Image (tube, rainbow over all chains, first blue to last red; front, side, top):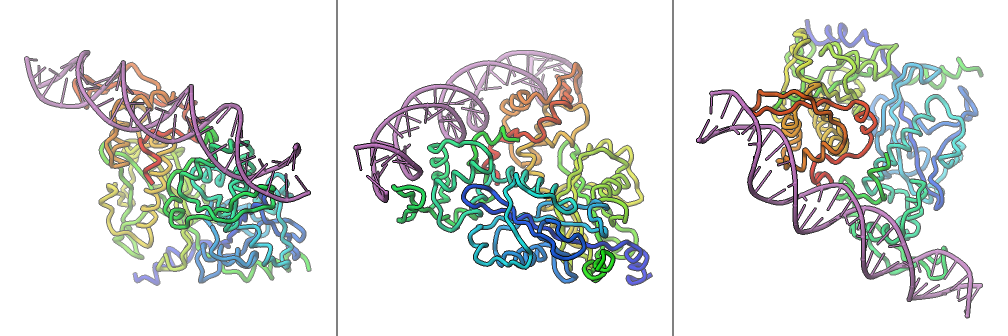
Length: 241
Length: 241
DNA sequence: TCAAAAGTGTTATGAGTACACCCATGG
DNA sequence: CCATGGGTGTACTCATAACACTTTTGA
């Protein structure tokens, strides 16, 4: 009994399945946290809103497929992209059984705008205004929101949603929007400052006020080494869940 | 252009893949954290140690497949089982490309012993004595260990590794073993007691000492409602990562 | 009686929280 | 000069951490 023979015995009679990747793409427009959805222009299921997704090709890994798909829609690569969960219900895809590996991506919404491709009829939706979605995409988004809330309460990943230069008031608004809570300005800025993640720039954003708010950028070195560390930026984080 | 037609266009030409589930089964023997591995007795790759796994059937979800596979090896159902990560490298399985969804399970090692099936040549291995493993199973275990350490630092899930009745010294030893650290007994017991997760029984375990240690059991109601809450049982949890 | 493990209380430190006023500027 | 948003300091509270002795009992 050689390998090929046994492959027939053990592997060959198994069912092969379609395997897809779906991307939950988060962005922040300065006021609200939003998700990028596409509208299907082709059959099947034309007209349905859905997450951006696609099948895993025969020579690519799931991570590579997610990057490819994200790039196809946004033009962006090298952005924060994390595998979230594998959705395996046999009835989740109504056309043919498909396993889907959901990823979530955090992007700077402004970078996206420059490179938007209209081919997919993509639109940003606020989290509380998500339209009816294809298949189980609504539960994917719900899980994505929860997991991101969980993770961002412990780790400084929301910076990924901001441009390279941002102000402390912008950062505060982002956290307040995402956790739907008002956060004390003084405690917040102190906490963020003591993390050592920020570098103050000699430049002000005068858009939001007459006085202007200083721009900051990330200290990328400290950022990378602190991504795994617990940094409780959100107040009362331990009571959140 | 109707649905069937488009299914041919869009779905039909996609590659279908084998999709498997692998289970990282953790147990605690009173001294060490261990993982249950099986030895393949058939070709292909006979003699290799590996995680317990199997292909996802055409009518079952990934979660159901994981439960089925866990039950096949341990005889146990209703145990703690959580999806961990989907491993999708096209070269990870050397026989045929297979996507694998890894799960981790926490079981009471003593329950298992009663129902062990010798069919799979299963053995428990301490985490620092894992033999060479099939495919990418070593990295699955490594990720499993890390994720479990992370999660158990925040949530009281290690109770799943203990029998229904356990003593505080046993619990302490479990945490010390898992985090390879010595933990202050007084702080530990106080912290655990104040969680409200434990019910003290009027019975002592006299195995470990002459004096005997009181047995406790879980308050299942509080346990379930606190699984999502942050409970920092491990000291210096925020410096761990 | 003694060895071996179980059980328990106090103090100190530091992180988190609550809270209110001055600053800078453009209109 | 004033309205608007930006920026900062202090005191209190509570959770965590450090630390050592007494109790029980079988051999």
